[in-house]
Length: 354
Image (cartoon, rainbow, N blue to C red):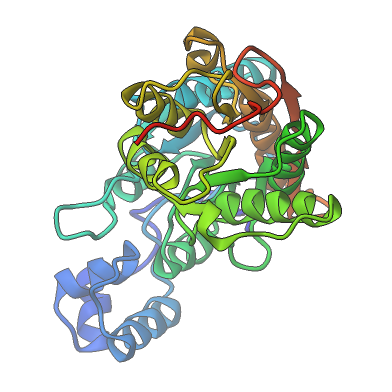
């Protein structure tokens, strides 16, 4: 994926109009293919791609691997959470050590039609950045193909879905984190342990639930499907899922929420039922965001090293940019339990109030 040479756009060969004429399509359609847009028919995409390669079209300057990189793009889903703040902190520190400049784009949101926005691609080609870090990316296959076609080095921080073969990514040991959270509750004497997970299609959520199930199985406890609820990593949905759990004939005595934000939704639902944490129900989160310390009571949670993940990703990106491929494409950093005041032994009798 490392680019070589320093050809300018002006000297890169034919214009996009020439490529469009060669492929028998309009210029806007050719532009969509160049920018990795989804709304192009496969046959049309094939013709344009072949024309691009045949004519030697290059939209942006290519990397010169002999020169020290100067500018790195960090493309994040959003900037309105402490999760993103921790990632930015890690990238900033590692970039300072490496003598790099960072440009941040909040460009992984979706349009009203549900399609991913493509503004980051236009900004990337305009700036001539040396590489890209993606945080919580939901990139399409066309966007991955666009990055590969332009030979742009990239590393993924906690990708939402399984990345394509060869893509370098950094994340947390989510499965082990799910095991650790569940084992903590088991050690306190809980047997009726529920889990509120994120979306089924997200890698981290599936891994945490798998860890939860593994810990139950190791303890000789049967996994109950009614104790597994899926939310959207947001407080509101987690609050509704908690009410569903409390309405069961045998409600849980403990809840493992697969993010701290969802744990706060659990807190809200329990308060609405007049239940006390941890006297009536214990709660464990995942992330160890600042909100976990501010909650009342302070939240026991699994810490994933967000800043360290981001810093590791930047160092890997620099290696990739210089042609030094990592031995493995997936790097996982360890998680650990941070015990606070939201967990205790289960009550002698269920105190759930309907």
